[in-house]
Length: 179
Image (cartoon, rainbow, N blue to C red):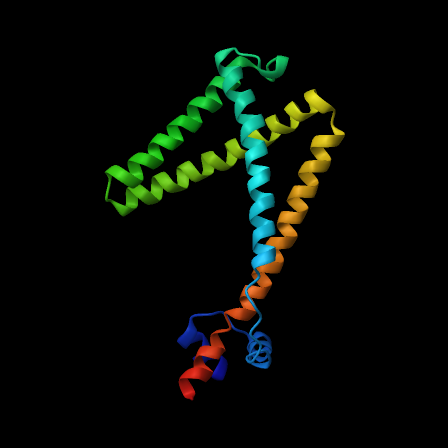
């Protein structure tokens, strides 16, 4: 019964076990995880920048027939042109959905479609970045750098999430309201 009342009041999916755990930690107030947050933002940003610089440069140059860093194009020309056109179309759709239309259904549809396209293109850009790194330095360096950045980013993000979960204990608000 108490668990149901907590669920109704706070909108959280509490089980008896999680409710008891939250109640035990109600007086803990850990400090803001600024270090883990900074580490996750730096490593995620570095991975994004490397992927965009290496992958997008190789993609766009392949679509226009350029050869950056003296590298031959990777994959067929039609694939580079198609992916570049799809990315530009997704960006235009998102712009139209956000700026020009006030219709929430249109925004939802374009947001979902553009999000799916962006995710597929991000995987392709990551692959192009890895292939470009392989062509420049061999497989070992880009794989080690990617695995290290993804590992540190994931660990820092998980630790930040766990600390923030302790900081945002919804039962603390109930205790403060009862005082």
